[in-house]
Length: 217
Image (cartoon, rainbow, N blue to C red; front, side, top):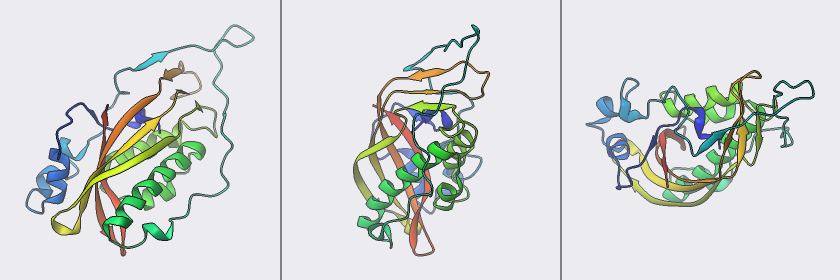
């Protein structure tokens, strides 16, 4: 999962974070998780500070060439598994795995409709990620390598006010190369481990992503 899509990276590993406390609390919701709040995970305008290094691929004419897609393009988005249906904590855990597969699908294809359908309209980091992969994805050759994220563990699920659930998930991403445009220099990102902190909200009888951010491990 390309984290350069605007997701807020933090280094504070204390649990629970202000994001989750605020998003789970009805009294703090408007001030801490609204569209204008930094604690809602307002996306950065620049890529996260490297663990990444910039590299240039030389073409036959001596100029730069965009990377070619290395993943086969899926024909359809992932289907929500029955285990992720409903509003139980077990369904919340399965939803996080499903949401990760939607992010990977969006990275493969540039199609963000299913990802956004599983996100609250006000989830700023969800929208920031979608905006980035709509421009840079494997299908158009601007994203190559082991960019799929893998959720290895979901933990610390807790119910809060307003029917929301918060928690964290361990995420690993391999080495990948990305470009923002065909003329931009490629950026090579090393394999990285993250902790995704998230809050889910109920919508239509199922969980959707309310807000999320990444903590680099």
